[in-house]
Structures are given as C-alpha cells and as structure tokens.
Image 1 (cartoon, rainbow, N blue to C red):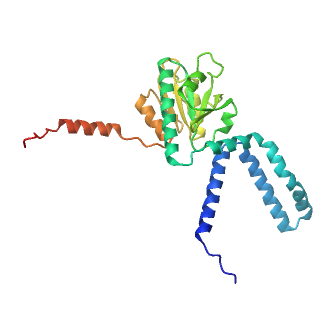
Image 2 (image 1 turned 90 degrees about the horizontal axis):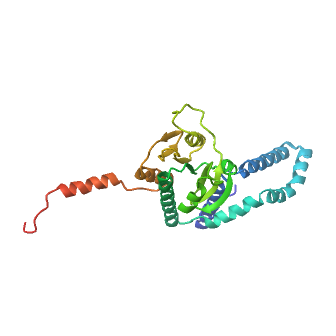
Image 3 (image 1 turned 135 degrees about the vertical axis):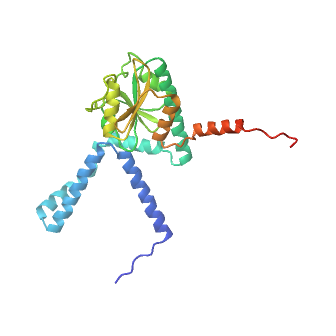
Length: 273
C-alpha cells in the first residue's frame, strides 16, 4: 500500500498560495457575467467526465474536439473583463494598513460630498457595494471606473447634468458607474418617500449593499440597508454607518465624551495634598 506523502512546510505554503489566488479570482469575477459562463464551462466538463465514465464515445469525442477552441473563445469573449481584472489586481491593496487607510479616505470623501449635496438640496443616491456583486446594475449605467472623490460625486450629481438621474455605484475606493437603474421596492412604504428612496430600499432588498439617499426636496440624508431605511441622519450617524459598511472600527465617541465629563466633574486634588 503506497504511503501518504508527507506534509512539508513547502507543501503548506504552496496550498495556501493557491487558495489565496483562487479566493482573489472569485472576488474579482463575483457579480459579473463571467460567473454564469464559467459555470456553463464547468457543467460541460462534468458532462465530458460522465460521458467518459459511461463510455458514450460519440459525445466524448465531440466534447474533446471542441475543447481546444474553448480557450480561444473565452479570451475573445472576455478580453475587456480580463483587462479590468488585471488592472484590479494591480490596484488591490495587499496589506491591511493600506486598505484601511484607503477605506477611511473613501468614507471621508463620501461624507464631504453628501454634506454638500444635502446643503444644496441636490437629489442623489450612492450605492456602496459589499459582498454581493452589483455588476448587473453597473452595466445598466455609464461605466466610469474612477477614483472616488468629493469632486467626482458632486460632478456626477450636478443638477441638470447627464448623470444626475440614477445611482452612482461605489466598489471599494472607486466609482464603478453612474446613472445606474435600480429596482423599486414592491413593499408598502410611506407616501412621503420618492422614487430615490424606493430604489434605495429595492436594491438593498436584493443585495447586501448600503444605499445613501439625499432628498431633493428637503436635503435630508437617509441610509437604506437590508430592505429598511433610516431617515434624517446626522453627520456622525452617517459616518458610523459608512464605516461599518467598509468594515472600519469607530471609537465610541459618546462613551468618550461621558468619560471626559466624569473626569471634569470629579474634584481635583491640590498639589499640596
């Protein structure tokens, strides 16, 4: 009976590296049309294996004849996706410190833009992608793939501009697309909520994203998540929700203020004592 190969440190490192590469590939193609096509390719491979096991020679030979052309067909079909994938690998932060810093900058830039939009009563809806990909909704709008910034968001939602209507979808620290169409919720909501709020609730019912909405009539800021919406949020409340969506930890400012008050209210000891 052949002995099992020994598990060496080199083998462990090899397995971990392959696992990381597979995981990164899944993150990159998540939410894209490529997932469905790769699923179809996987099904064809299973059919080929089943045909070989059942000795269905005609079906096996047919699939074996088509196999060499599959790779060329995939390259032609996904040439644009392959370019974006390689670019995304180059942009990805591989160390947590840089990733945390980028996410904090994204939160601050979004906060600055939302504050200005609220003050000027400019209607807007900003979608923050999380684990579930939003590629279907991104493809319904105008592709941007631009670095997230306050000025970019203000330019997108400029009143009367071509990108004002629709949603801006943010992936990580980049604005993937603008003027995107979103599904409206079919559940009963307050009549005071307009189309933007219904769209924000609708997209969060189907995915795990977070939607930030600025009302065009009142300028109030609302956040939708999990099919529910919180209305009229303050800056601190919005920062807390955005930070949670980005996986950032916030210090409990309320507790910190209470500690400061308690420290200030306690009698100080004199230097003589």
